[in-house]
Length: 338
Image (cartoon, rainbow, N blue to C red; front, side):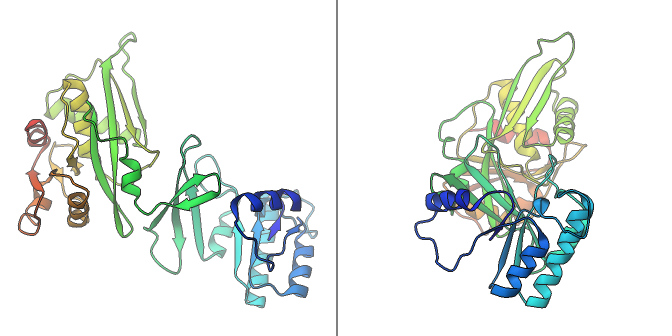
């Protein structure tokens, strides 16, 4: 374990906190010079190497500072040669930018076989592990971990974590789901619609939902559903800090806005999913059958979804009512029905 970020004493203190037992075959080297690391690896011939982080490493062949583009490219190439010639797996820890991309040149990302990224909010315990590049398998799988006093622990039922406080009915709260890798993930979308306090300016604020997508959904609700949202501040939040990808959560966002604006309290055992088009129609989502089966297992009694998905599920699903809708107005009527 080559550390350019911390000293041996700091690593030992962290290891004592998160590890019940430290293996005697783990060697720690606090070093930033790449040539010295190569020399130690040549003598010890380790089973694998961890470099933390590549932005702190430098090569004596260059005069630039550690972390510069030239140094990151040079040390990345040296690590590639070291791994290939020594038949040794190498794990590289890298910094990320504010946008979540790998810091430094794209060369390093092209060199490695797999790019993993931990995401999560600072004030949330949940951490999501995503794969942005994987030569050994799919990149759609995610891992869920909880930050605890002893370090990261695996979360086996991620849906229960996102929905642990959604048992009570509340205005502006709608449950939806996405399919991540090989498992459905249920989570709650909350919305707050309140009269704008500014001089003719309405705020549109979202956490976890793309602002451009939110503006489009609001425009559809105004034009097709007849909701006068022009003078309203609208806030949308995805509970738990998850940032869902794709458009399958559009319907849940629209119904959450409707629920808050009309002060309609939805049934907590109702789930909504579907993509909202600019014409107000609902488009199908992928893996809907697997999502519905998981929702039924978790106790959901009604699912509002596009009719094109619902037509394929009516004969194969028991214990859960399917409301197949074709447009946003049908979805609102199904949402308000008890």
